[in-house]
Amino acid sequence: MASARDGEWARHWQYPGVPGLDLLRARYVRHSFARHSHEGFVLGAVRRGIEDVVMPEGTIRARPGTVVMINPEVPHSAHAGVPEGWSYATLYPSAGLVAGIAREETTLRGTPGFAETIVEDEDTAQLIRAVHRAAEEGNALAADSVLRIAVARLLRRHGRSLPARPPLAAGARTAALARELLQERMTRPPSLEQLAQELGTSPFALLRAFKAAHGMPPHTWLTNARVRAARRLLEAGTPPAVAAAAVGFTDQPHLNRHFTRIVGVPPGAYQRERARTYKTGDGPRP
Image 1 (cartoon, rainbow, N blue to C red):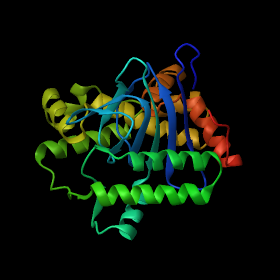
Image 2: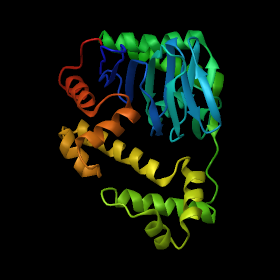
Image 3: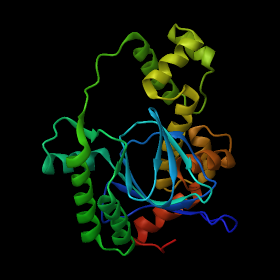
């Protein structure tokens, strides 16, 4: 993605030499990420500028020398913290990849995660950028090695075992059932009032329970779920317009808008990078 007017560009891709990892390298000025979450981890290192990341506990300011660490399914959004925007390198390792590194290199037990969201750690920030350089150069040995060193270092310094989920209270059970129904009816979701009636509660009680359980209201969660489903379809080669209809967006522009605000690149660019990755294993530097 590029803009001659403000200098924005981004590349979101996979490198077959390191399974279980997505990479994003970008410069954003006016772009903002809508509230969303990831199935895996987020490890980000800003090179220039400042990124404001809005977490459930408040806004953090990611600047050069810091590393942002976001655990799976934690809702967040982001935007530029200064007028000139920010440029950064981000790694998205899967939960399985991080768990394997934790078992081999740490004493963490249970589900590994990070106790902090942002830390001052220039050395590890440089390692995150080095993973990108190695992957872009097609150096699988270096990319895989440096990734594992970086993740192991962050886990040893800032890792913790994530708490086991307690038995669901009544409100959390309602939120879980609402999520299941929205997932099943992704293309034709009920209204909030209809959903509340079906679950035997009130609209505002459902809103409060859902946000407490998932960190976002039902309509925001549904958009995030639709984008996740669209990503899987695009990776399988489904045309963007067909993917848009399949997951419940009204048309391709509707998909484009929400996909770009959550993933960071338009669906067409996302699919082209996946096709290039799977067919050739390489691609041009942005």
